[in-house]
Amino acid sequence: MSRCSTHWCFAVILGLSGPIGQAQDNGHLQVDAARILICVDSCREAEEAGDYPRALRILERAMEVAKAEQDTARIALVAVKRGVINQRMGDYNAALSDFYQALRSYTSIGDLDGIAEVNNNIGSIHHYDRNYTKAASFYAQSLAIREAQGNPEQRALLLNNFGSLYEDRNMPDSALHFLRRALAFRLAQGDSAWVAVTYANMGSCFDKSGATDSARIYLRRGLSMIPRSQNEYLQGSMNIRLGSTYLGSGKSQEAIRLCRIGLDAAERLKLLPMVQRGCECLFKAYKESGNAGEALRMYERFIAARDSMFGQDRAKELTRIELTHNFEQRQLADSLASAEQRRTADLAFQQGIRGERDQKRVFLLGSILVLILAAGLWSRLRHTRRSRNVISKERERSDKLLLSILPRRVADELKEHGKAQAREVDEVSILFTDFQGFASLTEQMSAQELVESLDACFKAFDAISLRYGAEKIKTIGDAYMCAGGLPEWRPQSARDTVFAALDMLDWLVRHNALRTKLGKPTFAMRAGVHSGPVVAGIVGDSKFQYDVWGDTVNIAARMESSGEVGRLNISASTYLMVKETDGLQFTPRGKVTTKGKGELEMYFVERVPIHV
Image (cartoon, rainbow, N blue to C red; front, side, top):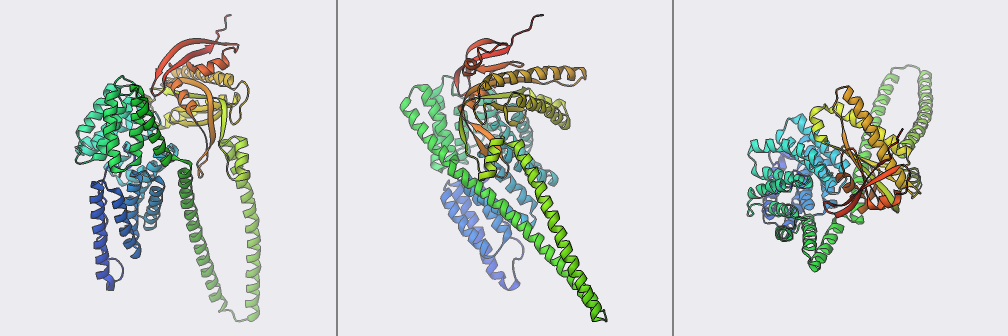
């Protein structure tokens, strides 16, 4: 909810002080500055009235004036303001283009404050796009600048963003750690709007942790601090979150009432992201209440809104914008380097000419020129050879790096065609592991020690995955994910994935025993496996990542979160595929209620004890 500093801030101040341009144009420039100021005031009024299309039209006029005056600072500020409105309306491609335009302008004038703000905004776009790695990278760049500036208010904002990021990664304990730190500052500052936002985020985290009562307390507390007349957007969003806490509790009518309030606000404001969340909540609530007709209608609206924001064409355009920005930055760097080389070469040549003028003999001058030419040709030849060797070595390094990120077949396809097609694969077994109480470990261990401990665990898990032919997908904080049966289906992949999970649990037992002897904190881990169809492919262009999608992934995550520490919990579909495997024994758990998936049949699995 607090993924962007501008989500809850309607005021953007354009710096209009100081002389601009030549002295003879002062009168004209003062008129243009006044026009921009009027545009900004009108834009603010349109925002407060919820008329975002009118706000965009006003900002277009302000941008025309700023570009006509070639005022880089004002171009950047108007681009940021326009990007914020586009983002709020759900047009993430337009928002990202605006933010990159602002980033280029701020970078050209060395405005660190503007660079930090835009990095935060770009991070929020990737956050909404569920590219959490990129989001964290941009948030971290913004946070580094804010810490160097010693700006506590902006640091608190980024703590909110990281809390929201961990919340969306389904790591509520870690999210609460950041949100409590942000709340302490907001309370001391007395900023009621941000306190309300932070309460709402904490309420969502408690809901994901299963602490429904605490979630409702925090969400209601946040609602009470934001009068509807002041911020209908915040009110609507918080009502949808509060309504979602009633799903699955037998109080579907209360969920319908609250989520309807939020959806009505979203429709009045024409905010597509909030429309999507409101329709999703109402679909689930109507389904629980037995109203199949309304549930279907809301589901269709939810899918339409989601596809509009996250469809393939939008994703391709988002990638194109990223690639275009990166290409332009490389071109700029190359142009600057070439210009510097030409300047250096021209300076050296002029110095040579001045020295040659002191020579008295034409023969000596000719000899020197011949030698310079020969030396230049020889240097050029050596440079060409060195460049070819460097290119060859870099190609070998890039091939090795690509194979460390992608399966060989996918990497070969990417190198040959420039892209790799996503594929549907049946009977893939997804394994999730997660350390319980990880947030408390962050308080007992230094950051360096914590990272080294996680690195040791994940390296061991990588080796186990490789031994059983499982494809590592990613790590998310303290969670580890791999899949058996990728990139192509193979027999016994479910069995191998189960044994890989058991080996990881066994390794952790031995590792904890060693840490106990050394007097160090130990790790407690849950593991879960589910088997079914997935879609597998590459996401990203600047930083490739092989990933999987589908309901199979969500159910596998529920297997892990619904298990017990030190045990492997598997689904019914995985059980049917491995139940005849020698050396395994199973404990039926019956149907267990899970968040968002209802009742799922589960089994604990372990090795058959060896009796001596």
